[in-house]
Image (cartoon, rainbow, N blue to C red; front, side, top):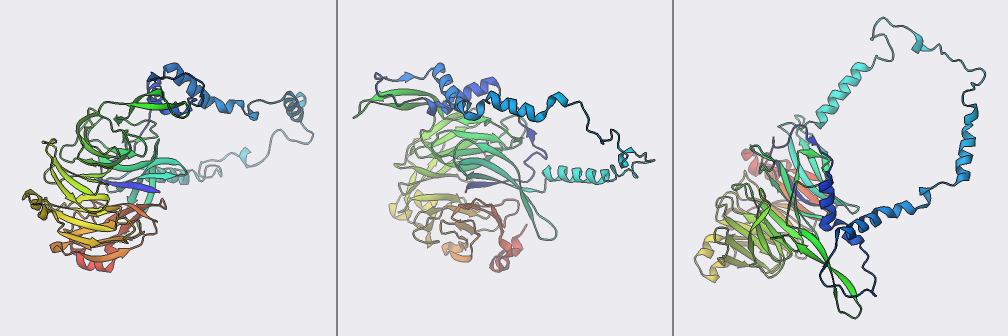
Length: 495
């Protein structure tokens, strides 16, 4: 399945990504000490004495790793019986290896013996030019052009998670070509992504993606200009080390207790939002009920906000006031906070259902939309909240966008056409809406055969291309202008 996707602006990727360097001994040691293998430590001995807050030592880690990697060494195939070796040697008949069979000519008289005046006449070289052409085509296929659109997908298949970097090539004949350029294997089930251009490795711009994952508090940042990378270049938060404690229950049992890095989340990271104005700033939403603001350049958490009472699903920065942050939660509220005054209570809207996704209107600094688990989408104007009356916190509009028992998992504003909003749902459909004058109307509905839709996004460079990912694990790109209703209404806005 595809759980999250993001467009990368044209020209952001290197034409040919660098090859990754193998991890150093220090990086491998850090990976081990981070607790990656701590699950291999045997905790089933009920007769041990109680251990209170005892740290797992480096020796314990080494034993766990050795045990994890040593299981295969005891298999039947790890050794060969002497009789089997003897039988194999007899079959090879090595004693008579140098004796030639009668009738075999040592020197052939085939075409390989002939002399040719030029390479063009040599049958072994006649296809050399064709091979060169093929090599050039292969190089061309692996080179990302400045005109190529690029999409990154967070994907999980057969319990393996990875990031896929897709190249989407438009063609003059109207038949685009899309393929996976390279992919990065990631350790945990991905839930959300955010593209970042902060120059973490120097220069004017970078090309990175932040990933929030299930059942881990760590936010990983990967360099998209490096192929076959093994470790992320930055980790925000996470587990510093593991401790083992014993608590008295009906039976004595060991409980692994993590010790988190300073400022870290303590549960799954459900939502991420990069600040395009302050390019080193990333916001995160977590199942630990907290919203955090990170400086990705230093790897430090700058602000922690605890204004929700249940899991926080989504965060979004305002396009015009980049200090203003929205967060939406399973406590059925949306909260607006100003990063310059994080202790201020902010403004809160009750939305009557669990929040799935948030989006600020890119054409108006005062309005945002929120999609909900009950299939509705609601729009709000923050100027009403600033008036201070609770009665003014009612939505500007509410639409039953999708099936009532299927959540609206993802929404995306079109950056070129004002009031054009896309919604994607667990009901396997994607719809386009005209929100003009707070009187929404459905323009068209599309069933992309992606399964339950988890993530959608309009392209900024090609604003009428909509990327769609869902439970079937196949990336779809819908050219919405091919729909007659969309073309009739918005063709003049195509850039």
